[in-house]
Amino acid sequence: MTLHVLREDDGEALPVVLLHGFPLDHRMWEATAAGLVGPREVLAADLPGSSGRTSSGAAASWAQDAAPSLDDAADRLAAELAERGTRRAVVVGLSMGGYVALALAERHPELVAALGLVDTKSTADTDEARAARLQVAEETERLGTVEAVTGMATSLVGESTRAAQPAVSEQLAAWIEEQDPADVAWAQRAMAARPDRTHVLAAFPGPVTVVVGDEDTVTPVAAAEHMVEAAPAAQLVVVPRSGHMSAVEQPAAVAAALSDLAQRADSA
Ligand code: MLT
Image (cartoon, rainbow, N blue to C red):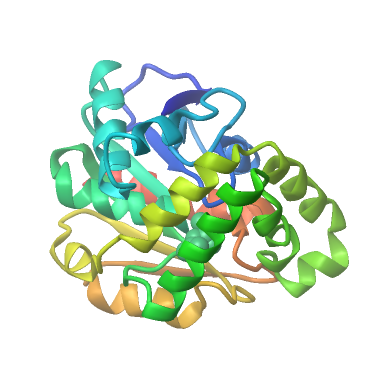
């Protein structure tokens, strides 16, 4: 687990903590972070299961002691934040990062002032999805490469991005190639083991923004609407011309939604 400071600020505004999707790392947030409004500290984690050029193999070494778990990722993140003196933050996660954000809200509620849930869902995997993940984990370990997930560079983005911004998939492919196969396997097993956390949203007292690309086929608009229905004060932002990687495909729109969330959290 590594926390990267994407923007420094020691003012009064709540910091924003950005949690990446799979199989990526903190770099997927750079464009969105650049578009966040106002003076505000912005941190981005390399969660276990991502290399991010700084923590390769870290998740694999945890797996020797314990079953892969996003709860552990949330606990490690809470410990890292405590160590640097961050006691409260706006926590934003895309897809797998959203699963970790919900785990953090359940296990460390004092830390989470507001939740940004981007292209993600609050439900657990179906049996079929879980079996597919375990197969990818097994194949990744057996081959010792990330080959089983390289196709995600194109399958995660929307049709509009594939047509109009081919550089996005090229960038995703380059980031995916840099991930450690053992970490990729760890993340698949950890995601397969996660529980349904819809009840966490229902009980969450702070501001919530749910963001989803209108062309997201992995966690579609219906999954976002399910979360908004669960969280009474949640706001829904549907990002046009975007698939599952809205923060990379349409960073300005995501930055605008998250800036608004952070401002609501500051004044809550
Ligand atoms: C992600 O983008 O983090 C993944 O699509 C999450 C998942 O596989 O559920």
